[in-house]
Image (cartoon, helix red, strand yellow):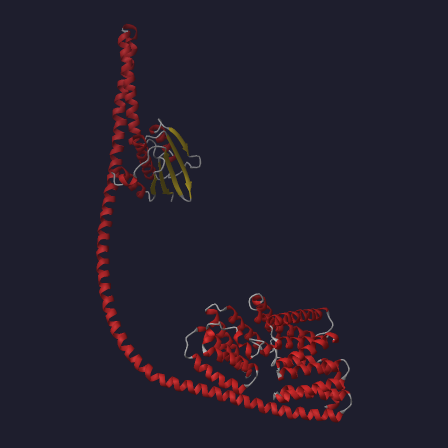
Length: 632
């Protein structure tokens, strides 16, 4: 195994940054769901306004966050219990959101990623309900971090970039976290790639976001954030063989880390400096820096990172063929791995113990509340029954009243409908009788009176002819009488035609209506538009023709008698299966409400109903009458 590692040590050194990112994620960028800050900057906690900081629960939440940052599991568990108790005393929704957020962070620290995602989602939903935009986006960041831990790197990167576009101009602190995470992921992609054009794009993006992160952390005036960015940016430049920039960035990161007095970060910077020096060929100096990193990790009991530092030192000694020293560091690595396993088991044990105590406390509270709830439920049940019975009695009375009222209305409606039906039947019978009488009178006038007048006219003409030579004066008087008889004949003939329209069966409706219009409305400026009306409308239905003609006659009579109009316009056409006739005049109009109960209007309305059609009026600047009759 040692020979194998020695043979491929150069390959291992090239891949050092891949292993580095797997470990740094638990310490650096992906552990930072909230702040690059120290305890003295707790007032900048993003979910809390100045007024809300007066509540002690929020100070506990701040302490919880920073304790999580220190990875002090025992202190985290203790604070979590206190937070749970404090948050039970308030009903603010933002408290619930922050509580879920902190619990999600707690679950993630203990490797329970699925539970963490659930809590982050609950936190996000609570913040969204009250339009807390920035806290909601912090929760989304937590979900993206969980995707990273589950190995879904590309999905996490997509979420980071999308979230960055949403908040880059809204919240500098969140934007700084996101730009750092994006930079590190492109750093990862570059380290795993080749010299292709596509991988050069990963290099360009990583460099861009590292520069942006530096700028943002300087604006925030957070030394530890600047130091961490310098550290990873320096490692990135070392990977790209830009050792000049790598050297000064890593040196700057170490200065700021010591200024912040963060032992964990000092160790991490030394680890990267050691690897950078080894990459430039000075293996012993690099091992010295790695040893310094191991010393700091030993002070913080970070056995995993200490083990990693010993692995790197062992690989360095192998390259120098110093196998004894390499073996010693391999043995150190094995011991540290055992300690790390023991520490992990202890942390998990404490986590499960805390969870058990929490559940037990919740169970005891639940049992204590059950008796109280049972009594309250019993009283509530009694009250509910009383209210329900009273309500049912009231509803019953209301229903009885409305049923009685409904029946009375139905009875009145039936009486009204029956009355209307009888009235319509009476009008219909009256119309039928009128038509029969009109036809009978018209026929009598035509066959009787008109014939008699014709006989008188012929006799007068014969007598006039005989007296023209013998008695011219008498002949002239007879001529005048003949003219009067002629006028009487025309009047009788016109009346006969009005009472019995000639050729109902053989003439088209179009011609019948035109004849009536020209006879009755001859004294008006009359315009008739019937070009689009076919000749065969109601051709086989003479009764319908007669009803339409009667309606038209009644409307024309109304114009002659009451309209005081000068112009009359008539349009006849077919549209969408209907025969339509529009009669419009420029007269004084008509008060439709005043005359709607008149016999004439009821008569033509009844004829329209017999035709299964409709008759409407519009009285504005004259009168417009529209008769619409279905063709089928």
